[in-house]
Image (cartoon, rainbow, N blue to C red; front, side, top):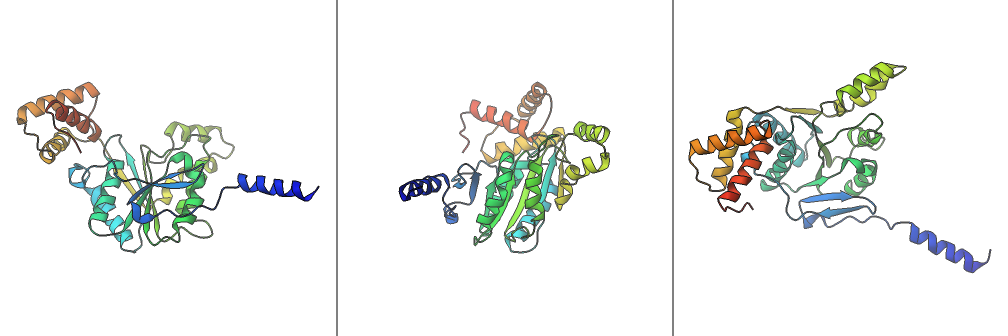
Length: 280
């Protein structure tokens, strides 16, 4: 093979190989989203979140996660956290609101959102964050795994850290509707069909045990539901008769088949639209 052919092959291989990933300007934003193909961290100028004070009915989870986050932001030991339970009860809203509260208190804390399907790339992300002069909350929303899903093995690298250990400047928060991150019927199916049932289930079920904090979220009461809406009205300056608000909100929940923080916000969004109030 002549020299020209070797040069062409070398040039082709260089084009196929992605350049080394460079760290972004972490001063550009407090929040980032991790993307793959190609790997990159995209800054988020305005995070979609609500104020911490407007999250009603989850006081214990709020206080526990806030204290854990502030310890981490101050450079002290902190736990990975799994927020699990009822849909629409503010799990992801709490993570984002607490991050905002930590920044408001003067801590240079960054949040990086990671999609479940991108978990296999998590090692590359950790290599990027490890030398950075900031502390990071990795956030994965709506995390769960199916019967044949192997992504959970990548998550173990974050929670256990492998031979290098999890970077001291990184903590992992996840939300899920499932306490054990996989459906109960799939757990039972594995117990019944596996040659060694206990081992077949243990590897996946034990994943949630690797979170130091388990914070449960449960359906709200009617008074908590109405309190959420009243808080939104006060925060956005909407004046409405209490009886009218109560009757409309209860009718709204009946059409949705249940109560939750998400249903409360949806009703309030409708109310604000009817009143001509813009929501920033």
